[in-house]
Image (tube, each protein chain N blue to C red):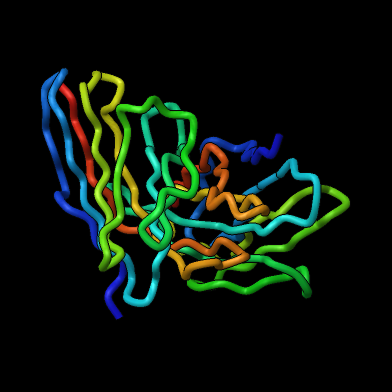
Length: 114
Length: 114
């Protein structure tokens, strides 16, 4: 069965430091992959997506992610974190076969220290 | 361009009552998805509507139902409410037949069951 694992439930980084959020997936083929961000009390905002092609994808707010097929990973990175980046981050895989379903990881809460 | 909108923002019900949640998709999107985000359970796929038809449902009991109207807006109904139905309910929309399943989310409806 398809699944998504975000190993880190909670991460704290200092403002200006670099960030990497981990995401591992289990899927039988090349997946469609997404990163979403959720601020407290808000819905999900799409940060970036990977469908095919270049394995390094750029997103909004200075985020990027790299798809590594050999490691079944799609880690999210940002070179310099801002206090406004504090939020919960979700990795998701789109299930092929016209199911309409996204499978989400459990989320990683990012705290930014001043 | 207006995003996905949901109403109401908050809804408080008592056990056994019925709740109705509403969602308007992005203009031009004909697919609507519902997800439940309950504490400790993460984001779970509930339902998918496209062109007025239910296309897929997640592992939820039949008391979770909904419909999609001719203008593509959607309604989620939860009958015989139970305490564990308390959650944030997120609606998302996408273009019909989007093979990549790129979904855009609304701000959610917070349902509290007392």
